[in-house]
Length: 69
Image 1 (cartoon, rainbow, N blue to C red):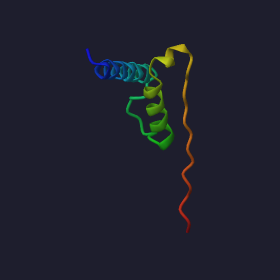
Image 2: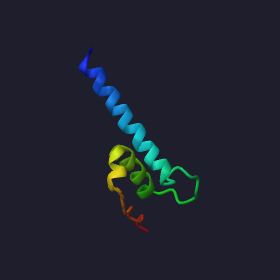
Image 3: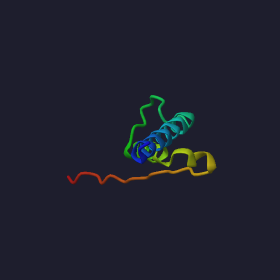
Image 4: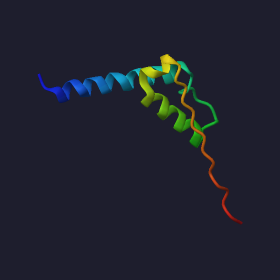
């Protein structure tokens, strides 16, 4: 059995569990509050995977500068 394929399966399961956690928190609902911070929070939640159920609650905040006049 190849070690690389076992690692790939573990990463895939990790990301699926992260997606389930993001879905459970309601991050995939369609609302008009689409922003850099929300997209970043969704990505970090998915990457955190099963750690979400151990109390990890990642949040991202980003400030986009206003264009100059």
